Image 1 (spheres, one colour):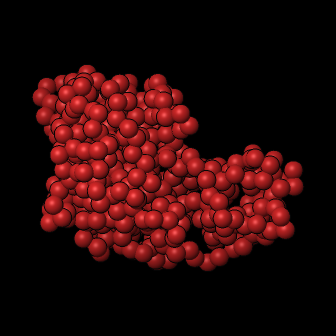
Image 2: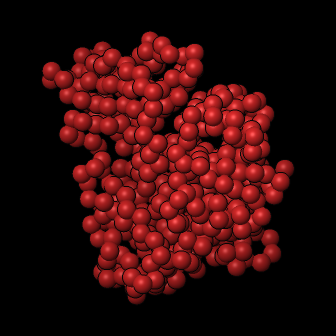
Length: 435
């Protein structure tokens, strides 16, 4: 078993020579953090005000991160332009993301060419955990726009001598499976639900590995993919805020080895913000290291996970993000019960035949009503009963149904959903209050 390729990348980018050890890694990270804080205060009027009481030289160990205030989604949406630390002419790409459905103030993330080159570096070395130069990779991701996720992945692998092509949006699963077999693609990269729909149509064993990215992948969904087509699945953790790349699994599959040369991770209590000890589940907080255009210092992602800093069974030293369960934000149901999209994912994707779904909460006759639209695989056209039973096994749903504060709308089968890549799976709350 080989050591995670993320370790070598981290050593090189942090300038660590000799064996990679946890103490040396964290010391190099803190030096990079001090430089990042100085850069942020020098280049950004917002950070200059925000960090007025913080002396960069006092940041000597990971515990000192608590001296820095958090940055939130609302901060980026409201003050993003004042957070930029370089002249506009040095900005190579701006990514605009909605913060709340289609009505919230958008947040805009800025990147220089150097920032994007760092992502290229990670994409190549991260993918080397699951591919070699003998592989042919197909990225089922948007790739036509320069510096989009798919474009960066294709360029990164091609630059490293690995064949990679893109295809977007995904076509009919049967046609796509035939194309993959004919072109001898051995590795696929894409959204979990798209790869699930494809897995049943692929010849068993034709694809060796798949990287599931851009959304939460429930364990049941991974199991179904692997059983259907005989491949090995790997998880990627990342977001636009992390520079698109954040971490990737090794062959052990015990968490995503993190891009610690460019990112510093913490886990905090979602309510109090207190830093949690190793192994405890909490909210993921990320600090960018060395980012030029728009550094993010202690950015609260809203994702829930555990952080493991012990040596991995592969021999790797880089920290791992484990049990990533997506956004922790909950929709509050009548009666005070809560419901999250990850709870729905965990239950619904355990239903054989389900390919994808969308959940909507509405108000109806003074109570909440939960509706589900779904796609089904061939031979599974009548999943309404099984999906209804699965919904009733979600604790918040079960309790609200028993109280009478929630009803279930009839399940509705659809043939296709929009192949959106930019919106993570969430509950579409039409009641006027999403928490």
